[in-house]
Length: 281
Image (cartoon, rainbow, N blue to C red):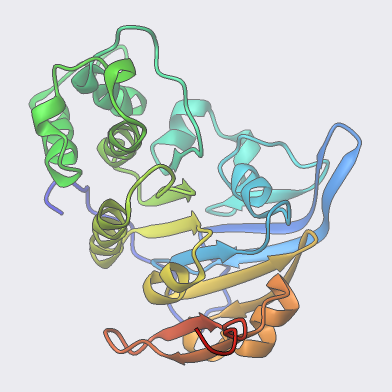
């Protein structure tokens, strides 16, 4: 995508250098309720990593920790070898962007003004709004098909339209690492595929994407690296073709299924076992 900035090269393979974004021995908790303990995970550079698992398994909590929104009770998240908590907010936001699960827009803000807020990390006392900022905003709105909504107020839009506006704001931020917490929420099936295709294109330009998705088939189709979680721990991780099996789906989700080859992409496709059809009729 033309509006994305050049990315830093990944570490040379075989050097043992950890990925740009990784977590070591995390304990994640809300107040005294522990979600995960001793959680260590690395996000492969330039991957499209998707985190899956049943409700309340800790996947969104992990994403919040990776994005710097949730401070671990123990352990640390490292970005380029440095604790992410030690970064200044704007400094971190120029490297790691987040599309949250649900967001509240300021009252009466227009679409174009909300998308423009994605450029905030790039502003400073010396560097003010520029032609590059304007181009990034326009490109992000075109990519998410919301250009015709630019002057509408966000609170007048449907849930699906608002989700695309927030996605545009995240794209306008132009970060080499982008975290997506259930980005297809509120979208119909056509717009789900449209948005996931957009993120796949973004990944192909060299960006690292980490998404939480509920739909296993979407995860298996789009991920280059899959992390399956249950009860706050990682059960399996790796390329979908290597780890997605009927046994894994049964272990993680308690679902009896068949795993076949997706006829469109060749990726694993999960087919739930049908209930027995009633006789006759």
